[in-house]
Image (cartoon, rainbow, N blue to C red; front, top):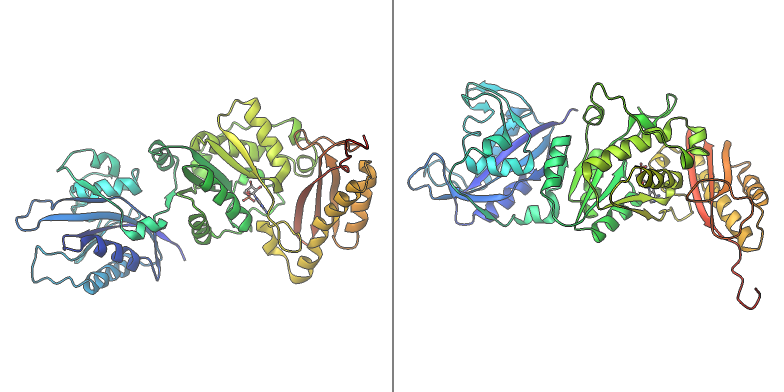
Length: 461
Ligand code: AMP
């Protein structure tokens, strides 16, 4: 079912107007409607000025909905009724919910006019609206009597001064995670952030590994943003781009729960508009292992990371050690291309049996899942032998291969490498990274583990 983007104006001039608004947002957020964000609460005179109407408290909510416009309007009216709105006293509005816009649709039917006829004239609508969707274009319509208007532009056209109120509970709980769909939305959001900004780049289908990284970003930075984009450039022709899991609503919920304030989830055309023709060609750390197995993979990764980096302007960017070569490639790129901001590498989060969490683990059937634990176990074997004093990489690799044989369907590589350069280490003289990739059924598994020779005491040395 397709999900439409719509905007709802919420207003109240009742004595308990803050609570009314908070309750209405919560009531909106169910059964086919999800509140994606809410603008600030503004208080000011009703427009056009109406004696006796008093000041009105307003906000605008951005929603994703599977309801068609008439059904959505019905929902709004039901919420108004439940809030005790009557038509007896025309100026008393316990709660006033308006369907401001529904995608770029123009509807002019008795009782249902979209965009809302006065939505581009009221400062108390435009101000909070431009908090959530500054670049939204309100389509031209006879009802509004205006040409197509960008929300932020209309908001800048003046009107009575408004006071800003604290957000209602609902928004404070973080219900208002900002979903930024376009470069302009992101740019506007970024320009208004204060303090340090942490960025977590993901392809969605999020799990507890992403959650831990998000939580860390939120803890270490004033503001944390996640990007959610399945990057076509990093998938080979025979890879799983089309079937890559997409779980947008669950992802937003997880990000919100772990401290994200906003998520940038663009369409491919927003990042790669027509005519896009410049790519990052990473050498060095990108060459072996994943780079050899998946030609152009790191070219796609480096290109998207550079673009997201430029657009989000992070103080800190969080990557998972799980994709160790990606960390090496991105670190090298940041150094070579003078990117501002620090890279923070987060430890790998694993299932209790050692399997590294991965969005692709959901492809396993039961038998495959049972066999999958062999990969982390093989790396652990290398770690144990190294700790016992085996320092020759070839010997460690042979032990891992022996462990994998019979469990996995194919071994792509097993190696001991320098984590910064991703070049092979022949003799272990200090900590190094054991890396491995193998196939089980249709899934390609990737993992790594720090290994080190035994620590010799000063007396022994
Ligand atoms: P992905 O969405 O798979 O591109 O991953 C997004 C980020 O999360 C990357 O920096 C990954 O390295 C990181 N990540 C993936 N799996 C894990 C994991 N099991 N533990 C920690 N971080 C992870």
